[in-house]
Amino acid sequence: MNKLINILKNISHKYASKWLVLLFDLCVVAFTFFLAYIIRFNFVIDFDFTVFLKQVPFVLVAALVSFLVVNSHKGVVRFTGVKDVINLIIGINILATILIVVTFLSRQYYFDRIFDIPGSIIYIHLLLNIFFLVGIKFFIKSLYRSIVTDFEVKKAVLIYGAGTSGMITYDAVTNDPKSNIEVVGFIDDNDSKSGKKINLLNVYHPEKITKAFIEKNKIDEVIISIQNIDSNKLLQITSNLFALNLKVKIVPAVKNWIDGDLSFGQIQDLNLEDLLGREPININNPMLAEEYNNKIIIVTGAAGSIGSELVRKLSRYDFKKLILVDNAESNLYDIQQELHRSGIINIESIVADIRNKVRINNIFDFYKPEIVFHAAAYKHVPLMEQSPYEAVSVNVKGTKNLIDLSVKYGVNKFILISTDKAVNPTNVMGATKRIAEMIVCCQNNTPSGKTKFIITRFGNVLGSNGSVIPLFKKQIESGGPLTVTHKDIIRYFMTIPEAAQLVLEASAMGLGHEIFVFDMGKPVKIYDLAINMITLSGFRFPEDISIKITGLRPGEKIFEELLVDGENTKPTYNEKIMIAKCKPINIGNMQENIEELCNLGPNSQNIEIVSKIKDIVLEYNPNNSKYDVLNIRK
Image 1 (tube, rainbow, N blue to C red):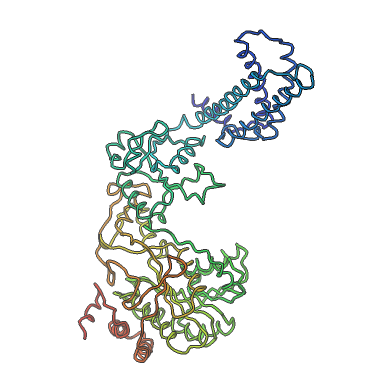
Image 2: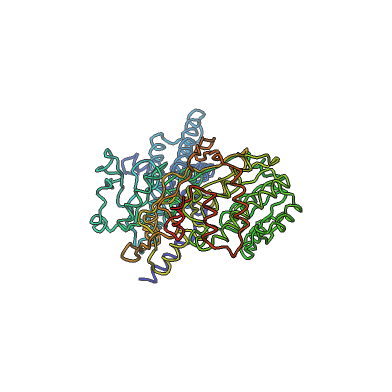
């Protein structure tokens, strides 16, 4: 039996020649022509058979011309679809039209009888051709599908969405010969649809989809097929389906369909971006080319998660020179080689530390940059709680070095990449990033030459080094448990490409004095994200992998904010991006305090450094850390 199955499968992998398909179609036309005569004469050969035999070659020639005109023979029979059927029917109608026209002319000008075919025969022949040619092609397609999939275990699937998109998805799944999916019903929360049938399949209300229902019908997965679905609703739907231990796939947006048609292969697994709880940002700004073409650009932290993506996006433009600066040698080499493989050669990769002002000055003096993207920073909250000196040296002193040099060498634009942790900070990392913002705001309030200073501020970056997503992935790979610091902790998320897009947009849009804030929509509960990741990885929660609550880490907040008190936003032409003005700052004492902070050496006590940070960032309130004692200070 297995040998027979293998033989059939091997045969099924071969494609019939288009000329063989054409010959087969002509044979069917000849057969249906004979059958049309039989039907016309009440299943009795009561007609001139000699004339019939002479008419057959003429009909075959007409059919040959018709099929060649529409190229119906070039279609792969096993993949016959609606467009193939329409094309074939057009060819059959061309054949009938040729026969009608020639018959009319033969009667008008008294041609040979072989060109005089009764009209009833022509119309019967037309209908028989449609029935047989279309039917045979679908039969072959069904036979092929049976050979390929009937010996495999089929997955029972529900389609979520009984609208137009759901119907198109149903057709894509059922018409694909290699699909091992059996659609057993639809899900729709529209009361007017639930309880009815589509293609003899039931439409169920989401409330009907219970564990008992899943077990009874042996459902394996659900395909979500709703166009323009609200992201929050998608998150709610998937959470409910995950709770039932169902696998979930999603149909892409219509604009991503190939040539306007959905294929089975385009139905994809749900990914983390789909679970962000908001619509992804899409920026298409023609000003970007004008902004970056023929420019000398420096990117600090170019080997990091955001910096490297920023470099990738900048590489699409016709810049004069792109300088990559980072002190992570191996990662910098990797991004350099990636760009070289893509044919980008007008770049310079420089191993340097932004804390070394002399070294950075030499780079600025040699290349004379026009745009500086400052992405270099220490960003890990727990580590910076233990090493405030390092946080200050990079996030504050390093930023100050770059700002001073940007002013000195007349850089056109300086873009600081900040974080939502700088807003009302509760940890050293966030507080030092807030000081970096304040230094930028000071430049905007003082005569600093032609340099335009811009800040971009956004939340957590999905998949960046050290973020929660890679951590969860590693914990899943090792069998769990996943560690969450607090069950109620929530975070805003964006993808790395989105972060880079925002920074590029900010540079093109910015005129100085602005903080660009991204509308990140609804924050994501980390506990729910952990459950979704477990399910997306093919495991069950909590049977296969559990979640362990570890308690808030030093300096960690339950939720993050995007605006400092006193910062008011206004919209831009992109509804996802807002502009906030820098909060007014008392420059005098602050600059003096920053100088004192930067002058503190590595032998300084951590509490001394953090105390000075708190003198500068008045809204900084250490939380759940050894620096909490500073909160009671007047």
